[in-house]
Image 1 (cartoon, helix red, strand yellow):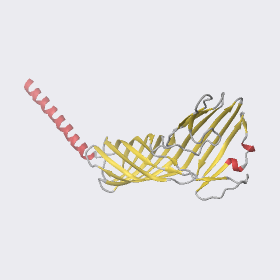
Image 2 (cartoon, one colour):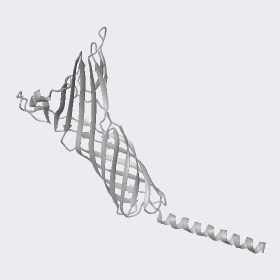
Image 3 (cartoon, rainbow, N blue to C red):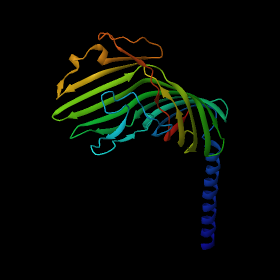
Length: 291
């Protein structure tokens, strides 16, 4: 009886092992992260600045031009430290809708929202005089891309490259100033215009099953933004609203490549077009669902 029971047990374990092996083979056959058809993914990540530069437009009322750390030295040379930046730095999240025409070639439309990090600088004058600067940006980014993918059982490398289009862009510049017992605060917003650049990514996709997968990618964006206009939206003097006393020329700026200078206080100030850097390189992670 013991021998019979042992034989039955061995046959049972063998059947279980064979069934598990068959399931593994079936899963491997149905698990590829690649394949034809539609898919959608949700992702998020963080961008680091790339191709940084000093932005010289900001700081008309500061000791120098641009975003900088400045320190007045009454007994020697003043110290200036320019802040090199790219407004593409910051957190991003979005959704991609894709379609694979073959197991290796597809197209994708991505919609991402950039929540730019803040850049700060401080300019110190004589006594307690100080000007604190803050610069940040937000941008909706649309990216139609071509997708090249591997076709392995579970772990698939892929590459994407295409066009990057900005929409709803807004750059915010703030100055918080103190001179003796007097304080000033101004907030300016730059917007308008549609920047166009390039984007690319290298990533790995890990299939959980035939429908779901997770992925991580290294993504690079090359983009420059030229706003069309700027508006001072807040101006306070010693905590009281001061913007009501500003002329249109002080509150509004129009940027262009070709303009005529005018001194009419009831017309916006004309200024040369800006080129604000938004290039970045960052890591994205997300979940992909295949239909």
